[in-house]
Length: 366
Image (tube, rainbow, N blue to C red; front, side):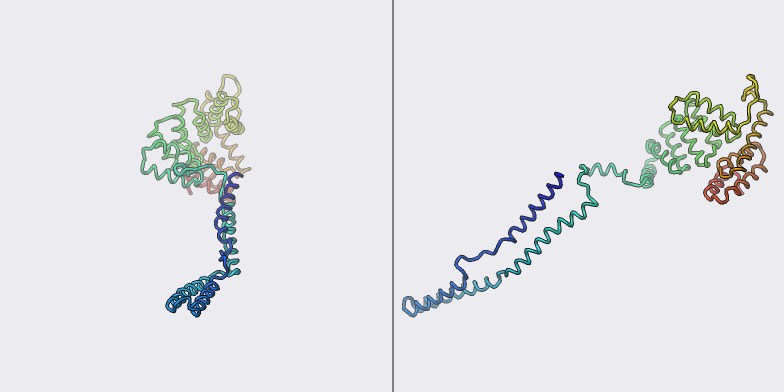
């Protein structure tokens, strides 16, 4: 309120300074009309000349001088403003001085912010980012990195943003450059693997799996890498291996780990579709024979196929089924699953598009 009061006081002072001279009445002569005075003087000169008080030359000179003054006074009086003209000028001045602040106020209220603190020009140059669209900021960083490709910090900042925007191919390049100029870490390896999987529509490809394995080699407790290695095992039809990875993660996890629910959900998913393990304490999943393991895998795949026939909207499930048949070296069933998936997802344009992109990443076209 102090600022508004100061603005009002300044406006009033400026208006008063302009209106005061306009509002003052015209200065009038103390002795009445000036032309009447000069006419009286002419009459006196004529009277003195007839009485012989002044000579003819002096009388003529006086007449000329008084006549000149009379004409000048008459001209001055003729240009004095009339009262109606003065009132009009005052009205115009008042309207202008009152209208300008009102107009300024109407413009300022929706656009201005009197409570905004000082914002020096240098700060405006350094901090324009908050008001800019994310795509514009990314374009600026990319332009900077084209001119300065060895800026490791720039690549480290850009890579996760590209992943969030769904530009996975560009994110892969950014993560690789980040490791080149910043060095290799487990986190960077797992982030790179996630970007590669994202580019393949969620399929953990061989390249992505290598990155996760490298991350675990650098840090055996890396959460993201371990989780995606479990996803890779599940996608390959090795549900038991995926369950072992996720069970170990949960065993190591703090009670308040934010990712605990995600891993538990994944573990529940594979356990629900996995066949029971052979009974007996001496028999463990890792010790199963090849025949038993093959039978277990085929059972998991068939259950997945049955579930998808009942609920065909699961795009990821169809991709896992196609991939499982490929791993089992059953190309005919893989193509049949592809065709079934397209029929099931026919009305779902977005799902069908995601399916086709995933099939392309798996190398199953047609």
